[in-house]
Length: 348
Image (tube, rainbow, N blue to C red; front, side):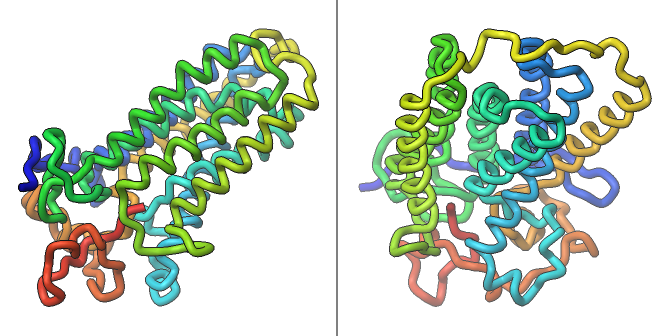
């Protein structure tokens, strides 16, 4: 007999502003970006960053992350839908953000910042992966509150009955979130040993992908890539890439990755106030916009969340979406006959 310990009835919505709903899931993005900024501001002198460059790096990171997460979701997970509804691609407030796209996009954004400001990419990346692990961990809490990504049926006492799936299931996003949080002390330990530049980044890439392979064994994937579940293909690629980078940086050697001043952060006190205020406004706008992100899948918002948040209404921002155009979730279909299958979105 399958039993469990928690029935998921969490309201995913924080409030409403200017026609947009504000979400716990989106708040996790905002908290992650803010944590990134506070961490960089604390370690900016060893990294040779001015306060203005801290704002700039955080903005590059955040914009790259949002664009990368969206593009990977659209191209690899929901292309059949967006091929028919391309005007919804910019509508991030309808959901649709890929975790692996988060990693890719934030990397590209960081590289663009380093190229523009003449900073050493590997040293910056070695520092960023620490708050990055926090970002990935808190993001999984947002996934859990959303209640969308569910695991296989289970009889463990900590099983969860999610809103869109029958029976008690493994809370796989909490497994993955715990893994991400546990990476933080390990990455700090590696960085304190002052390894060659790029080593901390390589550890993050390897351990994130390798450990997630085991967490994703409890998940369902409706899409596939190279003969494997799409997410597992990305996990395997990250594991191999991380292992290759570890070998490469160990053989290459070089100066220490952390704990030394890469270059003087001169001029931080003489930065134009107008530039700082402009950067603050842009950063605040990113934090506020992130609050509008509802989930990692494209959703018919009122249809899916009305039971958990009474009062949801269709509008120009939240139109009625065709259920047949959205992918079905295998998790919700495991115990249902075909005529009762749910239109809930798949997990990734």
